[in-house]
Length: 156
Image (cartoon, rainbow, N blue to C red; front, top):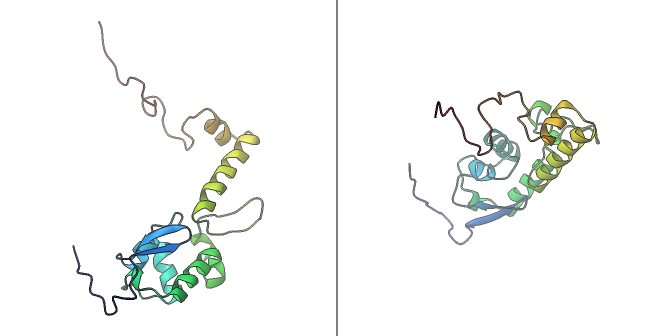
């Protein structure tokens, strides 16, 4: 479904917006453009727009600088804007003892630190990561062979 891009003020429209170290396409609808940030999904982006008072129907390029700053603030501390704890993507941080939303480059760092922690204390999950095996209980007899020949060849 292609919609034409009708602009009331074409001089103030921005085709690329920088939010949380991510380039965002200004031609897309605001919540779906915001969902391109790592760690922000569609549901979080829609709720973020509602909490920030941004209409769900405007394009991302039509947002003002104040609205973009508000998006950054909401992403940093979503629980202070009324987001429930179960809605956040970092349920419990062992070092800080808090719930929170992790986005952008912080997501990679937190994930790497969590995997290193479970490896260090030699949890079952950590050992599976160490051995490069499936971690979440999947079958490994016939899948996940990393490029090895698959299947049964039969008699020769």
